[in-house]
Image (cartoon, rainbow, N blue to C red; front, side, top):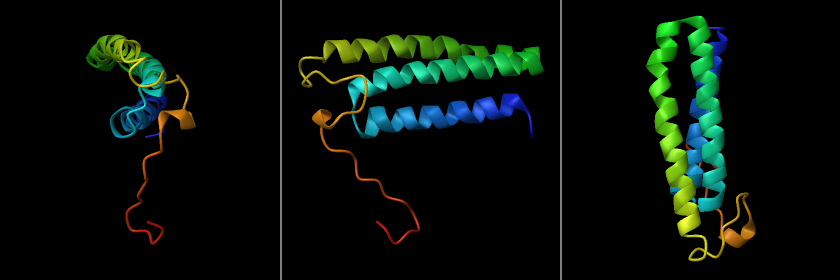
Length: 111
């Protein structure tokens, strides 16, 4: 379990989940378009790590790079098409984009 390939894939999943929250929950188009780039970089790193460990595993994971390349173009295009409509959302999180989503943590008394 102490393999760099596994760590890189877990990192990719964490970055992807963070991007999912930014894009689908908070609807921050600018930040999501920049975050999609980080998701793409993390999957390229995971494919490289898996390829060096086992070539077949790298080949199996490689279609994710193709899909995320297409997804990056789509997310960026959505941001550019809606730039004026959504009050020019920035590429980094800002208060001008609107209120933050209310986070809830399960099994805590701080909700």
